[in-house]
Length: 314
Image (cartoon, rainbow, N blue to C red; front, side, top):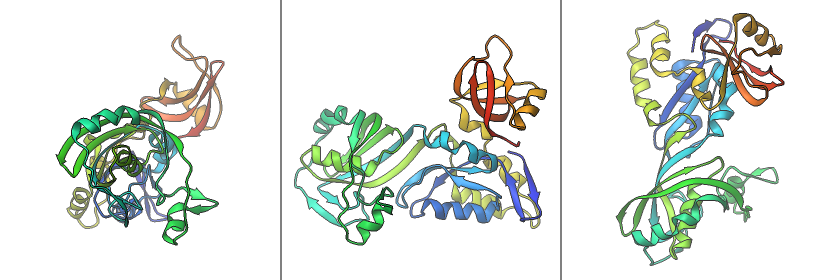
C-alpha cells in the first residue's frame, strides 16, 4: 500500500484496493475515472463491471494489486435485487422496452416453492443486452442495432437464492449468492417466466465481490469530501491510509507460504526456492509467498519447490 511520487509520469504509485460503493447512474468506467482524477494513480483497474443502474461493491485495484484481480473476480458475489412482476423488457431491467406482459402476480409461497430450482449449477441464457461477444461483436451492440441476438445457455453456480421481502403484489426483493458469469437480470426474467408471470429488475445492489463486502465499501462522496479537505499542495498519503486496503486482502483464500529474507530476494528475481518446514506443501497449484507479512509472489509448488509466476514489488 506504499505510495511515492513518480516524477516522470507525474503519477502516484499506489498499491492496494479501494472498495468503492458505486453510486446509481455511473458506469464502472465513469466511477474509475473519478478516482483517477482524485488520486492520479500510475496503474489502476476494476474487478467486475456493474451496470449504471446498479449500486454497491466495485473493487478498484491500484498498482501491484492489479496482479490479483483475477482472484477477486473469480470469487463469490452477493446481490440484493428487486423484481417487478407483470412486465418483461428486452434488457431485463428498467432501461429497455416492454416486450411481454402478464396479469399474474406470484405470492410469497409460490415464489419460495420454485427457489430450489434456481440453486446449484444451473443453465442460464444471458440477456441480449450484455457484453458477451457474438462473432466478435458485443451482444448489446448488435441488439441496439436491431439485430436478432441468440445467446446460448451456459452453466452458472447459484450457491444461494433467498426471498428477502414481498414489498407488495407487484414487487419482491431477493438476495443471491452466485459465482462468476451470473446475470441477475436474466435470473429475474427466468423467475418471472417460471412463475407464469413476467419480471424484470428494478433495483440492484452488489453486496460482496470475493473477499470484499459492505464493511469495506467507501462511498464516492466520502472520498470526494476527504480529497477536498486536503490542504493545497498536500500529498494523498492521508487518503491512501484511510481508504486503500493492502494488496494481500485479495488473496485470503490462497495458502500463504512464509519465506526468509534471502529466499524473498531470490523469488523477486524469478528464481524458484526450496520450501523449508514441516508444514510447507509438497505440491500446490496456487499459493503466495510472503516475508514479514508482505506478499512477495504468487506461484505454484511442485516437489517442495516454490516457482513464482507473478512477482510483487512492494
